[in-house]
Image (cartoon, rainbow, N blue to C red; front, side):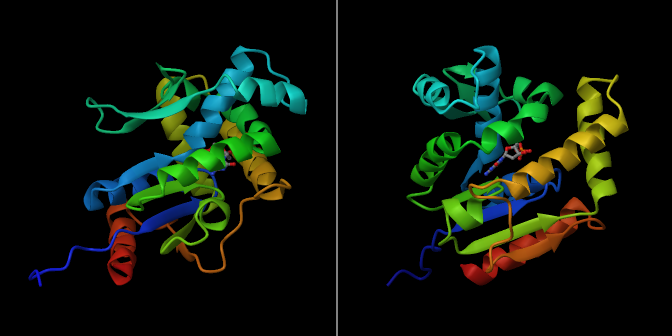
Length: 230
Ligand code: DC
């Protein structure tokens, strides 16, 4: 018997409202555990970018089905940032998908049944060997209902608006707090009211409210939960 058993690999899901810092925490956990990190929201954003560029009418099922056949999504390591970037048909679109133009349409696109079937199948395939941290809206409920650790992230709306504003302001100093607030509220509403896989807390998820937590504090809390499950 080896002195130390290899640690069992698990699946960690982080779902929650917009701008609750899911990707920051997911990335930190993945780095520490040497797990794969997948930003599922980036997949919906990249699909939205393709639809906008190619004038795909996402209210028409046949147009969506046809367009999805021409979309390939891949994640690639960015050695400069140390992050994982998303590629749409071979093009690194990590930066452009963060634009407000995409944020304004992504919830509509993500509510389309065919789009979700397309994205969820790829997400499930990525997790078949476990050792993965994935963040999104339906990861603990639909993509990996069997996940060992499910975290549901929330924070006060004003805290979330300011966080997102700070992020977007760096790219676009003309952006207003009002625009960011409206977009956040609209996305949360659509994401939690859509018919297919709406955003909701899985019954076995643990809530992490980080309104008044530093990044270090929230990481320590999550690390404790991970340890308990390994
Ligand atoms: O996490 P994000 O803000 O980058 O996600 C962009 C949008 O994609 C979000 O408004 C809802 C949608 N989304 C989803 O419906 N399901 C997921 N698993 C992840 C994101």
